[in-house]
Image (cartoon, rainbow, N blue to C red):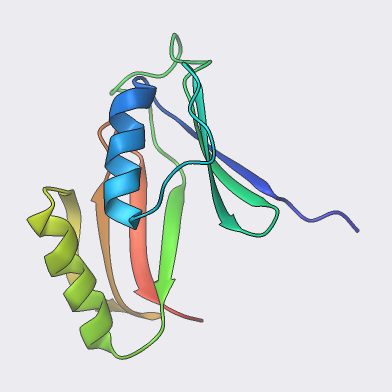
Length: 121
C-alpha cells in the first residue's frame, strides 16, 4: 500500500514563505527553486511550499486544512512553543486553550495557511 509522502502548501511568495517556515520549524529546505521549496520532515516524507498555482492563491482564498505539529510532553510544551513562535512574530489565530485532544493553539503563515500545535496523539 502506498502512503502519502508529499504535503504541499500553496504560497504566493516562495522566498518569504521559505524564510517563515525555516525560522518557525528551525529546519533548512532540501532545495530552493523559484516556485518549489521542499523540506524533508522524515525519511522520504516531504513538506513543500509551492507557488506554481500562485495565480489562483490569494489572501482571500479559503483555508480548509492545517499543518500540524504534535509535541510530546506536558501542556507546558505547547505553551512554551506558543511563547517561542509569538516571539518570532507568528500571527496568532487561536491562543492556547484546552480542547478535546488537549492543549492547542493555531498560528497562520504569511498566506493565511493554518499551523496547529497540539499534544502527541
